[in-house]
Image (tube, rainbow, N blue to C red):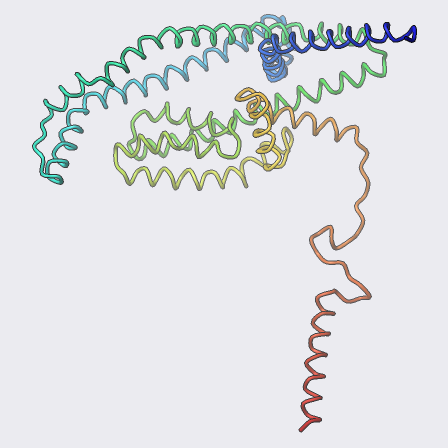
Length: 382
């Protein structure tokens, strides 16, 4: 046996053990790493506002606290508005449920010639086995729901704490990172950081402005139609339509359509038509003007990045996909060398010319020549 073989075997086993240990630690910490990534992008999003406030003499920690307080107040207000709307709709549905049940029973009796009554139906439902099993499963599932809610609140608190530290101690974090790099690398890291701040902040602020415009437009429509809970629905449409790209407008418009349908079925068609028209106005007029200097990426690239982010990280990936891709695109645009495009018709979707004539013209000439030859043979035979 060679003298180096036992040492090589021990080294291979040690490397394999380190790899397994690293994989186990990564999978155990994947939740923490995801929260840190979300907090980092949130800190990048509020960095312009914090820097502007600190430039006017305010302490950076206080500026970060005020920005987070404004975000928290806006989030709580949105949840309360949406919760009041849903609670009101649920109460109305519960109050109107006997009328709906009577109408359904009358239709069944007239159609199938039965003699059902609401009292009999209610008694059969209350004493049914599936209802008792459903109540038992719901009672056992309350603990799971409570655990999920508490876990979500703890995760949200963790994200806010990390993002607060990232935003408040941003300069100190950059100095600590640059202190272990040579001067040339420091300039590249700072430039990449600046690009990330510009693109992420620009994405959030441009989307916020478009959400405000979309919410106001839909609010005017809902008020004109007399649809209830117009403020909450307008806020819902504005946020969902802007922070879920491409299909967000249609997803957000489903809830106003449902509420409008309860008022008048024709109102739902009006809401649908307005959503479709506004989506075209936003895609071709509003969005190019607002995002030309912040997040100028192709809609197909944006949709593909959202799909990829969702596949990799779920809802979190869908939220941070577009600013991440915009940052990567800007970073590559700053460092990748570009060349002038040759003057070729194929670049513009045309065909390549050969010997001064296009291929299609040559084919047509050949076909016409064959027709002329056929006519000449026919004339000679006659």
